[in-house]
Length: 308
Image (cartoon, rainbow, N blue to C red):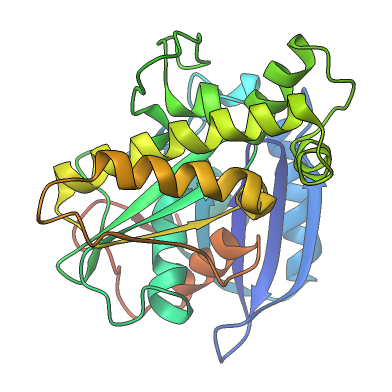
């Protein structure tokens, strides 16, 4: 018998087997292809299952999603952007298995609540800042998905000062300004010669002025978005993970300065913003929590399908 966890990211899939202690092991990863996306995802799941009978699968996906319908539509996966029935496809692949599905930010919040910085915290935002920006909400001690499953999608809060077109079709979203991909793109437009967000962070720490400006721009936008979210949601804790979040002082100094500048109301003035202690596989960990839960941890949201 096997319990599986699946992370559908903007650029890669990750899947693993969840053991009795809730640890995700035997993790395999695969880049998201330009075409034949489900076939690659399917083969990855079958490889992780290793021929065992699968009893449960937890899925965390980049958004937007339609959780009640079991549909994912990640902005950065063109073949699925108009919507792909991931719950139905996984249920058909593993007949009889319980399949649970949530946006990646919801899984991130589950992971932080289970084994990270949100243990014992009742109202918080968990964020991922990587190739994209997402998040999940903890409200009165429970992870909240909202009406369609997209609650906490902080990447599409609009930040002032940057009228940058976003992949969602809007303008000025924090994801379009402050993600690793967006920051590297802006830096290249200014003459920087690197490629990735990780290279950009390394260059900024080494004193490259364009890279430093790119991270200052990203950190300021993130601090603005976090401050706005905190005032709206009445939260006291924000935990930030993802690869680009580990860029160090060039990102975090302007981020915290922006929070100090904008989070001025009494009820958010003590807002705690910290780097996640979980590794970059936190969404997969949360998908594992989702898979092993005795009942749907999100409540009656239509997230669960039990085979065909």
